[in-house]
Length: 157
Ligand SMILES: Cc1cc2nc3c(=O)[nH]c(=O)nc-3n(C[C@H](O)[C@H](O)[C@H](O)COP(=O)(O)O)c2cc1C
Image (tube, rainbow, N blue to C red; front, side, top):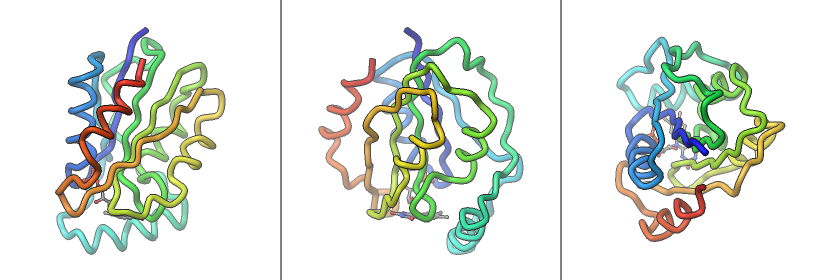
């Protein structure tokens, strides 16, 4: 069984959690990133993100330097953007076939997770999608107790 932790992160929260998971589960880790970076103005990105989510935009993403066929377990991390996964994750899920794999999703957010996990489940037809971990932040401060995250990480196999 080989595990890879894949994540997208705009402002660092999801990256922090992905690294924590990777440290505990081992395996590999890779960051999903857009070819065109989002800007530094947070409020502008929030507005841009709303437009992108509303129209189902799929930004071009950088080629991953990993061969996904080598893994049977994928830990997939996304920030919540307008109640769902970030557009970069939408591109990733539409351009990669995770069928036959077990997917453990986690989503960092400010308290409004919306339909993120349902949407991941729908986008991962053919995969076994396990219960997701909802991880709350206030800006860059982790609000979800670390023990709850640990408990969820222990279920990854
Ligand atoms: C474009 C955009 C949309 C967001 N939409 C939501 C949302 O719908 N619900 C929520 O709780 N937080 C929302 N947030 C806050 C982020 O989900 C939260 O800060 C997350 O931890 C950021 O992860 P990152 O640092 O890995 O990018 C949004 C942030 C951005 C930039």
